Amino acid sequence: MLKDKRPVIETERLMLVRCTNDILEALFEGEDSLSKHLDITIPSQWTEFGDLAFRWTYDQLQLPGAKGEWFSYLPILKDGSILVGSCGYKGAPKDGIVEIGYEVATEYRNRGLACEIAAALITNALSHEEVVCIQAHTLAEENASVAVLRKNGMMQTASLNDPEDGDIWQWKICRQPDII
Image (cartoon, rainbow, N blue to C red):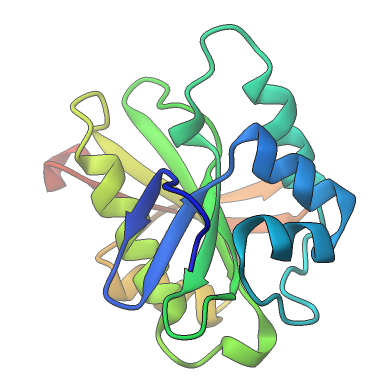
């Protein structure tokens, strides 16, 4: 599968490979370069968000003291070594809170992969003492992401207005339920 040992979060069906500088540089060179670098298959339209989040991650990794485990990951299906989306954290914990995000390539949706990715990110975050709560945001409507977060025990905690996305819902799960 992978050519060398990479920092990963492993689930039953997936390996969430942490994006390091060399992986991000291969990604920026194009899908063929990333495919060869990780020895994986990359489906068309594996990301709807493009490389904006990856460029942000790359910039963050250049900062002194950056902790790579709190940024982007590539979820790779073990069966077939196939990249099925992107996921990760939106930075290191602040005041005990870390935010997760994820996407699954269109052709791999409705297989429980988003639930598996979110569960892995939540479990991994809670394995760090400094993390008290995990949060996520969705559009303010019933959709697949809302279902994923509910299945993972997250609760809607706020309705907000985001300057870019409009009305959104905030979701949280905490070590101690009374913190929410």
